[in-house]
Image (cartoon, rainbow, N blue to C red; front, side):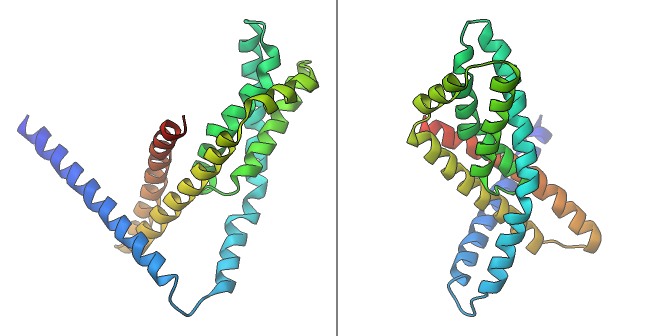
Amino acid sequence: MTKIFRQFGRVSLSLVQEAGGMTIFLLEGLGLALVPPFRFRRLFQELYLIGVRSIPIILLTAAFTGMVMALQGYYTLRQYGSEGALGAAGALSLIREMGPVLTGIMVSARLTAMFDVMGILGGYLVGVVLLGVSSGTYFATMVQSVVPLDINGGIVKSLVFGITVVLVACYKGYNTEHGAEGVSRATNQTVVLSAVLVLAWDYLLTSFFM
């Protein structure tokens, strides 16, 4: 029993130490970003690599996510005679949760708004074109249900997730040791820790915006 408590204590201290290290790393990075020389060309290169070049995977994943959600949602809502609410249910799920979370986990929180739009169109394809839900009802319920708070919440989530993933990746990469083995370990830790933190932030932010 004593060993269990000791192990729990070591893990807890390690987590606190790493959280503190990442916080200091973030503050130092923000401070250095205001000190010359300013490498705007490098900044735009990174924006292009992270943003523009991620569009195909974002659109593909979003389309199939929206289609699957529409397919599942349609048969669930039909049991209660509420097929008309398919547009609202899909849009709210994508804008509030699925868009920011899946985008954050997949591609470091790139272009969340595009994911939302493509997901809604994918849901339209399945719900309206394939399953026969009224097009007017699909969009009307969506417009009535989605409020600015939902959109703003999704944007805030995408920003927080983006900062989190970039911070973890930079921190782990900067502190990598032991050559190729250390790079492999840092990469695995970055993926796992980023995913866990995105889900944890999602719960906290969802509670805040509810």
